[in-house]
Length: 439
Ligand code: 5CA
Picture 1 (cartoon, helix red, strand yellow):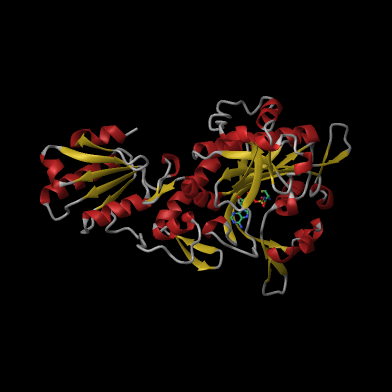
Picture 2: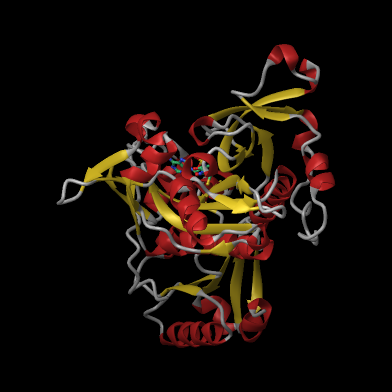
């Protein structure tokens, strides 16, 4: 993409409404714009990252055996009256009336909806297990929307729902998601610690939140000090989803970690000196709630002996749009964002320091074409601007590597290569640049 043609409204100044770094940088780097409190438009740069995050989430869901569907954002109120949650959900639910005065709502989550779909389609235990997911916008009328996409009112969530015959099979489904979540966050380079959590309005008695430790996190969390040194990035690699995952689950939940609601100092199993209290960003939350929805909604199957059994269910959420903010909280410096390669909006930035110089322009245009032909996504700064402004813009948007073309280097057949994360710069012969980055 040529920057001269790209819709990238950068801001020089820090927007006063943004309290945390990810919100500031998303506005400054032209990724999002606020529409109303907690509701955002995603501009091209932000949308690219959102799509990349979504794709990693999707691939890991598919790998675990979950199947993608797409349910609507607007649901009929009757569904929620049937499950008994319509009143309970309170003011967080946006209630709407259609032209026929029918009560509708903008879905804050989809347990009821998916349960009726499965209820109407599955009649026998032989059709189990099933795990269905979608990646869809949700609306929760949060009391205090804040921190940009971190706590929005409208936000993108991956949510899935598992259906099993009995508690043991349901636990295996829960464990599969536990593994898929570790893999998902690891692919984004994030260390997300699974913590015992409160189940809140979703219900049930077993749940884990995946928390990224960050000073700006909204959750108060507690964990064993050893979590800080534990490398979970490679934990779930190569694990077979069809094997018994309970030992893996036990291992990765054996070190103490709990959210504020679940942490009871008087009964905490580890001594105070081994306990860390910190702030966390909740990027995922998994629940096992048995028959809480299948029972009232009549989602039953015929078991092996012919008797009707209510389905055992769990639900599993990942905050896809929140992750974009969380990734920036975990990856930035004073100059801007530092995207991990796996979610970067473009793999490379290409800067032409002197577009007015014919040699520079020809070399930069040519390199841009070759990099694209090699399948690389490149943001090419071909604008007529000062070198300082170009460097600042490229650092702000945070692409993993920058290639810089200027008259001096070019005379010796070189360009400059800057690695955004460590700032290291080195000369690179122009004719080796494509080979260096092409897969
Ligand atoms: N139905 C269940 C699981 S599918 C559910 O809704 N779980 S949840 O309430 O915990 O939400 C799942 C994830 O969505 C959270 O872990 C969080 O990462 C994200 N999320 C929740 N509320 C917001 C919000 N207001 N803004 C951005 N992300 C949010």
